[in-house]
Image 1 (cartoon, rainbow, N blue to C red):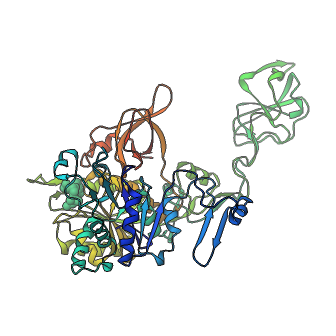
Image 2 (image 1 turned 90 degrees about the vertical axis):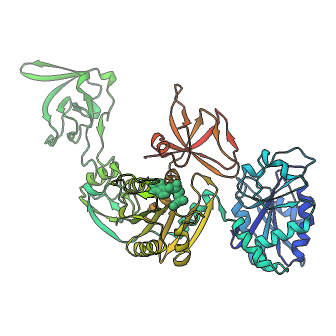
Image 3 (image 1 turned 45 degrees about the vertical axis):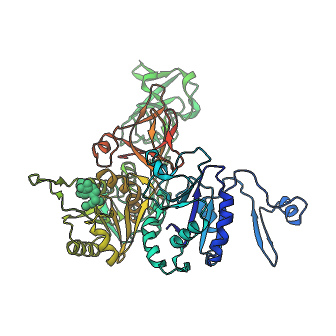
Length: 602
Ligand code: AMP
Ligand code: MG
């Protein structure tokens, strides 16, 4: 059961007219009689006001208090203005006094991921919601559901008569607070409902929990700049010089004094090559020939490009002329220190070093710098059917692709890989490997074996040895995901299907690696593109479709899917240059609508 600060939350999914509020009103007393302390969070679509005109609190609020707290012996209330954006679902849930609650019932917030009971009445001609909403854990209806299987009804979900309020209430009690149930088989019922109420998390909630659980490495090492690419700085870089050192010419041409721009012709008095300088000041009407990058004379900070000049000779003396109308004082020079000045803070600790940063650090005359040491990541694949690519293919087996895809992803992130190979589906072998890996590595990644299959041993082993949660994330592809720690070492059990492995890595492991490498404010690059075709999605879960984005003939960013999206079709990742991220709010995307894309390989 999803909980917020250990308080379970539960909602009801129904089309309007089903009588949700009336049902809640009737069920709440049954729950409170069973001893549950209840909170309710309700979403209002309109600009509601609970504070009546003329009351003192109203007057003080209207006078300008954005938070108005009113209290009496019997109840108290905070009336807050919501100035810019509405508070998030999580923020609202945080407002409750959790220590005095057993459960929060939610009305509305239908795009949020949390367990819900679907309500449906025969009298209303609506479709079933649960085929399109993975958050639904039970159904309450007055329809004969035997005949509904062809309409998508899922007979595996627990179902109740919508008028049998006792049955619905007792299901809620069993699911969220079995200890409150009076009847004798309470614990058996609770066990059964545990598997019915998996911890559903949204992608954002999953990422947030992971980021809260991992900490940056602190140990640093020194690298020379030629080996600094993709490292994260463990020191600040301050410039001890001006870049450029001198004001210099941006063109091959002629340098003159600023105050001489109106003159037509100049006497040529010298030539300055790159690496040299003119030894004295210019006199009125004098010019020097100058090459790009060469320091200009100290009083000659206007340069005219060679293509705009003519030279002539008179009495053995060389002259140069320009069209003075085109010449502006101070043009075509690069000022000393215009890139970096002495004492300037150039980079701070935590800066990731890319190509430009390598160049900039070198431009300061710095040859080595302190960086966070490489993150050591241990990886292994699991599965009796999984085979090393060097072996002849055996019956009923597949070659290990996940470990290699992970090696690629980890190398792009500059990690040191500890490759522990393929483990058979064997409790002891997995236990041994996981505990050994957790000692030598900063992070352990496995793929496969985290679902509920008989041979999914990772789950068993970690339940015994680690502090691990098994999450069902509301996303496709990608769930399930195991995350936690073994000792102090973060552990990710990624799903076995190759696309799900990569998509889970990109969404959950990559942010953790960036944080552990000292880049705490790292954000994935996300862009908006126009869908050039209809895209499959489902209400209540995030869909990651493999996509190809490009500019269309009008220069707009458009995106289409790579075609078949099965989570075993690794080719879809190879053909893609982005993931299309479709928000749980949308049941589908029509051509022409805007979607979010996460470019790959950048
Ligand atoms: P599992 O989560 O172990 O049930 O695996 C789910 C699916 O992913 C199964 O079809 C596995 O055969 C497949 N799979 C698991 N590990 C790998 C791997 N290392 N490389 C390719 N496919 C895998
Ligand atoms: Mg397996």
